[in-house]
Length: 199
Length: 247
Image (cartoon, rainbow over all chains, first blue to last red; front, top):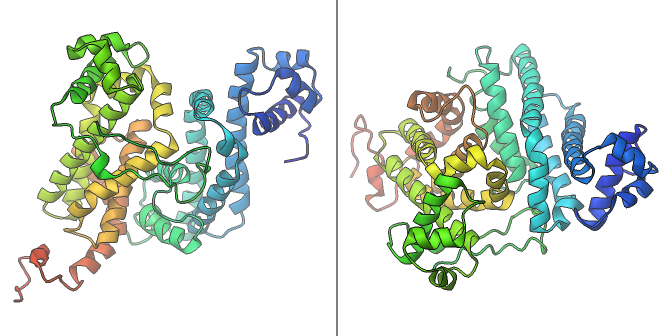
């Protein structure tokens, strides 16, 4: 988190995240971002001609994409889809729990953030779905997922479950790996494994 | 009027913190059939939203639509239109979940119950004109309203109200988890409709249930079937006609 990205545009967004963590969504100015990133105010406007609102919108999307990318990286070495889903949920919830942004923003600021993220949601869904589709293909090749699974439908279903559980774990303790594994087996994967009946 | 308190203080605990601490008692839920002025206001709000959306609806509109005065609106709902919105939404949640519970109660078997529950809920929400307007024209308002915390409350509420219905087929803890699972799916498909799977079509709902829900529940239903029967009329849950009755 401390090292600065090389690309100046990313450096600006990185600095924006730090400013929001420190001062909330409304408590910082573009001068603060300029100072934290080492990129001049004029240049910031060149990268984000829409000014502050564009900066916030694109930074929010960038940060969410980074969250999922890092999560995929953290589970990349695990051998099965089940292992990746279990670890992904446990780690993802832990990261969210530690997020100073989510913890410190006021309700009105969170609403602003939701509005900022809204336009890029289909894109984020699509990226997660494609990632899961590839993993499902691998699982089919390994013989862990039934060969007649409709991969599009399966990937879409898993995307929905992951997004739902990541946001709202309900009554399950998501820091307990064995509890999460039980849920993943039953609610995520039971219909996809070898031997499950056809849709 | 019933107060839908959000006991979880965002400043105190992070929304990412486990446990959620969002308690919403079912007894707090407004009764959609009570016919009082609050419910008239909730109905007025639904009509206004269906016509021109939440953002453009004013307290004057609501008072006029409900046939009452601004002063009465503010006396009953000092929180203004957002308080009435809470009332309207939770009345709808209750009506929806009660109707789903009836469907589950009348189902032939677990598969029929799951399919019926999903299909019912999606049809109810699809036919909700105010919700449709907001989803089409005020999607950001919709997302802002349905934040992580409120989703937790809806899941919890579905667990409370639907668990007894699913206990026909599953052990209590499994019945509760299943109710919450279905609520997740409903919320997901309402927030992000699928271009290929229209769950207001019963065949599509059946396909989803058979593909992804039933396989995970089958062992649990099996466990329930063989669980020791409680000493009450609960024994009637084993209504498998092929099994000889044991008295």
